[in-house]
Image (tube, rainbow, N blue to C red; front, side, top):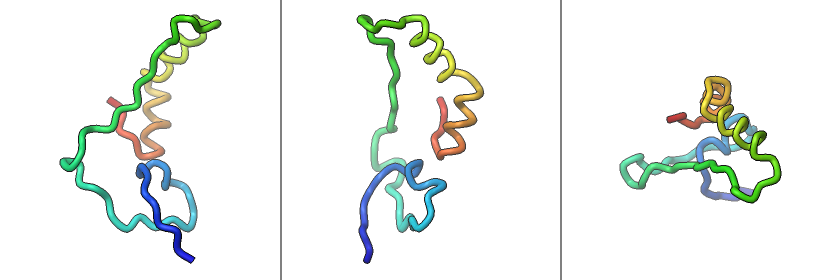
Length: 72
């Protein structure tokens, strides 16, 4: 049985039995952005800040790249 669907390319990386049939051309849509922010009322501001700093660093870039994302 075939169950077609749509999703980001990163969701299919490393998953067996998924065949990517086609992809939307990059010029057909706006860039997909995944923003991150610290919630003002959050309980652990320092951990949130550390996590944002991690997301901006080379280790996170390597993880994102591994799963098909292009870090900015």
